[in-house]
Amino acid sequence: MAIVFYDLAGQDGRNFSPYCWRTRLALAHKGLDYEHRGTAFTAIPAVGGPDFRTVPIIEDAGQMIGDSTRIADYLEAQYPDRPSLFGGAAGQALCKFVHSWTNAVVHPGVARSVVKDISDHICAEDRDYFRASREKIFGQPLAAVQAGREDRLEQFRADLYPLRLTVRGQAFLGGETANYADYIVFGAFQWARTISDYRLLADDDPILAWFLRVGELFDGLGRKAPGYY
Ligand SMILES: N[C@@H](CCC(=O)N[C@@H](CS)C(=O)NCC(=O)O)C(=O)O
Image (cartoon, rainbow, N blue to C red; front, side, top):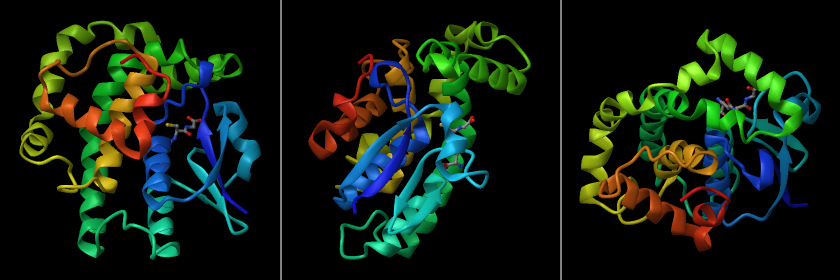
């Protein structure tokens, strides 16, 4: 039986979860067939019970596995004959840094820039849950969180300098070919692209060129997904 992949669902087939994009690209990288199940936020508890509070979740060979990092590690161990996500143990360990950097630096900047746009694109049944849970996190109405994003853009772009320097000098974070590090960071920008026309990256930013390159992989998996650019 093919793997079942529970992905976050938004309106009009917009799959906007950054973590689910990591898993989606990891499955494609491994060349694994899967059944894609779009899942609303409020439907997640019904998928795997109380141990699974977030997506992505995959079901494979009778097991449920949650958390994008655990899923990537599982796929690498379970399917060693398929293309490697990490290129070995050192690459796998370095991806933990890429994960931490992305979560600490990229995700907060993206979230504050587009959180109101997310709420405008989520499934109708999730609206109240999303607004209440995110307003609790931010301590403000979502429109107020997002307000002033233009004033924060220069600092956000400056914070991306190490990424910019890297992808200016090589095609992918993985080198000549993409690996899981690319998918971690790609997920953050794909999150924004799927639900907002706000441009976090300048047209001439090497990070945008890299993002578009990753979007072309696997027959344009990222590019073809509903989004704004
Ligand atoms: N550490 C988890 C985080 C996953 C996560 O936060 N997923 C969000 C969607 S992007 C989610 O399912 N949130 C559920 C909720 O907020 O109720 C991973 O890497 O998979």
